[in-house]
Length: 514
Figure 1 (cartoon, rainbow, N blue to C red):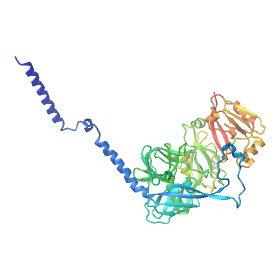
Figure 2: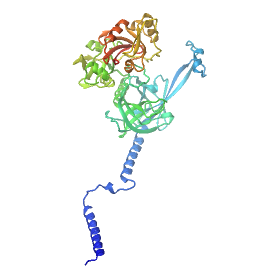
Figure 3: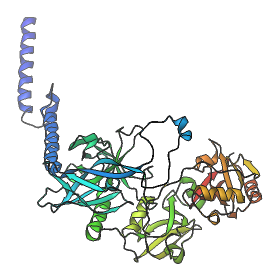
Figure 4: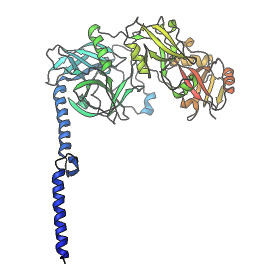
């Protein structure tokens, strides 16, 4: 009879031998990934991080020499003593006096960034960095300082070009196209807070950003920004935003902040716009830009429902721009309420897309528009006009219209209170916004808006003049009441509205309260 202990020992030894033999045999095949046996720190991950770090280091080495610091001096009148007056007392201490020889001046200095785009001394920066400057200095990475000449500037895109007398300068490479994708690495260069030649890293957070509340010198501004979380601060303006290939994909221009400093969102002008504007400014010192001669706005889902569009797409024509004469859109047969779907067969989904599709044609070019009107598509050929040369424009402060003793109507269905446009109200609006009284159309004036009503939801505010509801012209308070009375709960209705602060008409689509 066999010994049970010996039997178990033999089985154990045999099992171990078989396991060892099987492992040796399996090792000849690539069945299991090597990471299964890895413990602790991964050499592969460390190597990947080191590769990224080396890439960033190389980009800094290549790009930083082409980044410059831009210093500008502006001379402004000093019209008050250098004392701080508490806000409640300002109205009692007014120092505004007529311009005259006794008035002193003072110099305000500003700082920004720029990037060398040609070895013979051409530099791209932001228009707002140099606008109004009497003296511009450029400081290179090697410490050399130059007096810079302003070649030209384009307030519409916030791009300016400078020239210094230097040669063989290091140049930043511009990306060949605008294929920037959300999520890719980008690096921002500039001189934030006087910390010269700083580089920060982040990703592209979004593309095609528009409608930012930025200061504007012109009503023809084009917004189509790259959004990034790479830190951008005051002083970064005009510096390059660079991709992982070391190519400039944008020019840093703005931040979204409640404090004036970085809070996670920065914006850059895409390289396609930069290149187009830069080439024109270097060649001629100015930018000639084609226009349709219309005011436009985005199509909302409610607009799409009211217009029987399958979805919110295209760009809505809200009015003609009478500053462009003769008006190309009016001559071609375009109408307020049309939705531009395509330009030359290419879809336009946003306001900025239509602006760019038109703006970078030559004035005098003819383009084919596909528009949506009365439930059907139609093609319209427009011979483009030229954007008027407009001096700096300042938006007046909105303080709200006066009543002028007019009767009012409060309509809960639309969430606003309106009054007749009386002669007194017309005169007050004209004076407030530096308009002629004849510029203020007949209609009803919005005096107040419910915070949570339909008008507020449609961004309709005080001081606007309603001239049409649906297909019905509004010339009086009675017209307004009749039109609203005929609306049913839940109806979607379009209002054509004149905004005196912008001297423009816009469509607002509202849903009647249930």
